[in-house]
Every structure is written in C-alpha cells, then in structure tokens.
Length: 461
Image 1: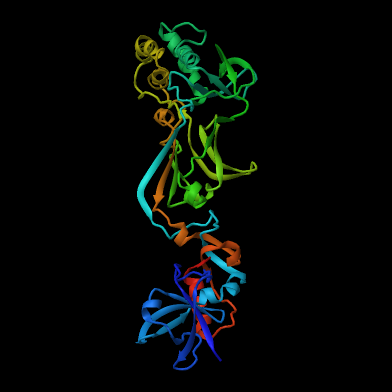
Image 2: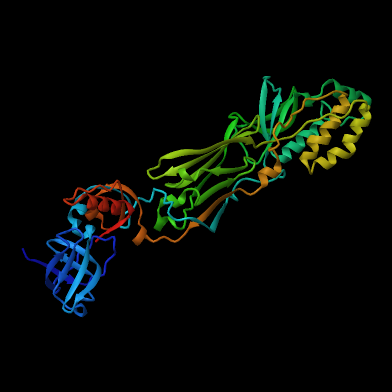
C-alpha cells in the first residue's frame, strides 16, 4: 500500500492543539524505514534535501507530525524522523472532554487568590480621617452627674454644660441657705450637711445625651437653683459614621482576591478603642463599613460596633470593642486635720475663683476644700480604665487602607484561577486542567502524553 505525506512549515507552540492549513503544501510518496511505526515513524521520500530543508511539519493519514530530524540519504532522497503531535492529532477529543480547569486565559474567577505571582514591596496607602467625631475638650461637652436626692427622693442623672457644672460646684461652696460662710457657726452647719456626699459620680462626655425635659438640680434636699436636663435613657448612640471602603488598585484587573491579605490591610485607629485590624477576607466584597458607638451615661463605658455592608443591603459584624469613653471626674478629700475655717477660707479665696474658668480644677481642688470643712472623707469616683481621658477623645480617628502590589502577570501564557468544569473548546487559549484524562483512540504512551500536557498547561487553538 502506498502512503503519501503533506509537508510544510508551521509556526505554533509545542503545547498547542493548532492544526495547520495544508492548502498548497507539497505532497510526497513515502517509504517507511525500519518497519511501519505510525506513531513516531522514520520515512524516506524521493526529494533532494535542498527542496525539503525548510519543512518542519507533516500530515499523514489524519495524523499530525513534527519533523524531529532530517537526514540526507543520497542525492534525490531524504529521510525524515517524525514525532506525533498528540495535541493536534487528538484535538477533537481534547476539545469536547469536560475537564476541571484550574487556570485559564479566557475566563477567571476573581474571588480565588492567585499565588502564582509574588507580593512586591510596592504599596499605596489611603487614609480617611473622621474629623467629625466630637472632640470639644473640657471647654465643651457635657457633665453627667448621678445625684441622690430630689423632691421625690431617689437617684437622678443630670446633664450639665461646663458653665452649669461650674456654677453647681461654686454653689456647693456656700452655706445651706445660699449665703457665704463667714463664721464658725456656718462652717459647722456645712459639716453637718455635706452636699458632696450625695453626688455618686461625675462623668464628662464629648457629646450630649438625649434628655426628657429639665428640672432643678437637687443635691440631697438642697435645691441648687440650677436647671438641667434629666437623662432618662442612660445609653445613647454617641457617634455613627459610614465610610466607602477603598479597594485595591489592582483588583479591577486582577480580581477581588487583591482586596484580601496579604495584598490589602485595613486598620481602624479609633481612640479610646485602640487600633483595630479588620479582617480583609471579610471585606473583599464589602462596599461600605459603618461605625456605631454607644455609651452608658452612668459608667462612661462605650461600645463600638463596626459592620460591613454588602450588595443588597446585607451587613455583617466586623468588630465589637468596649472601652471607657466617658472621663470620670475624680472626687477626692483633703487630709484630715485642717480646721474648718482654714479649709473654707482656702476655698473661698483661691479655688472658687480659679475654678470658674476651669471646671476640672473644681472637680479636684475645690471638692477637696469641701471635704476639709466637714473633716470627713467624701464619696469618690474612680477610673478603673486608663483609656478614659480627654486625650483619647481628642485624638484623630483614622481609617487606613494599605495596599501591596503583586508582580506583573502574564495572562496569555499563565492564565488566571478559574477552578470550574469546562470543555477546552468552550474556553480556548491557555489552560491547565486537574486530572487531565482524555479518552483518545491512541496508544498508551499517547494517552500519557496528552494527560501530561493537560496538567502542565496547553493552548487550545
């Protein structure tokens, strides 16, 4: 039986299924050398080497061959050592076989992290400053005092401005009937009824609480003459902030996985709650984050909840942190032993005047003066947490997004993560398959070779 082969030149990748257009190719009769091995045969053709020296590819009986070697037999005859191009020969079977495609240049799933390319030291940083957080200092904000005593009895939470708080403490330096103590009798009256004993706590907050009307402040049975708001709901929403979440600059072209670690890092610096690292894996598909801070007026304890917002309005908790937000105003007593007149004189002559411009000084030194008049230890509010401070409330609140860049990719020759079942003919281009078993009508070595190409990477063209 006579065999013929078409010879020509093709430019294609070694791991490609591309088949040449053989129109116009030269056709020769052949003689098999060393038997009829059709997989990787050696054939002799009746052609001078100078005529066929440029050929690198052949097609014979529906099979595609690379020309591995050319040998001059003698003048007018050339020997070709051929090797089956299994990808081109079994292109149809490969193209129609459903395979689990790990990487593809034609399609990808951006939610799958691509570890093929390393993280570089190049980075960009985005800062969002929350300068609308209330930070008035002690010259602003409010004082919430828990007082035992009113016309009806019981304990009441009053909310006072700094000016009202100053007036209140100034009034506590006076006698029961409101006149300044000028003699021993009045000092003794003050020691018998010490109004500071009825103040259970004093807490400063950067922002006002909601109140249910106003009433005169009573300390014990003493009417101060100061009208202040009454805090009925001890828990309030101190602060709410919604931020559009910055995204990694490479996410649009490389995939959402760039919005996750190690490429993206998100930190919320929010004193007094500290620096909070948010889990970037939960933020990859997040559009916004919302910060809410609730505060207890009685204890000053604050709770910050950070929630992520996703498409469709769904939210998820990212962080829940507690800290001291209110600043306790400590009430202390002066050492026992000072005479009533001496202590009271110190209050009148020095502390009251200075404290009118500085309510913090009143909370410390002025209250100590009252204690020396009664020659007793008064109630005190202690700050159990070191975070309750004016400094913490005044510090800038910043949300920082740090993005590290990945090395440049080569999608055409490396593809990107896909991880789905598909037929190569439905994708085309470069791809890598997992367990690339393809049913072909070839020999076992050819089966193994096709499988190796599927799993190492090939082009369906």
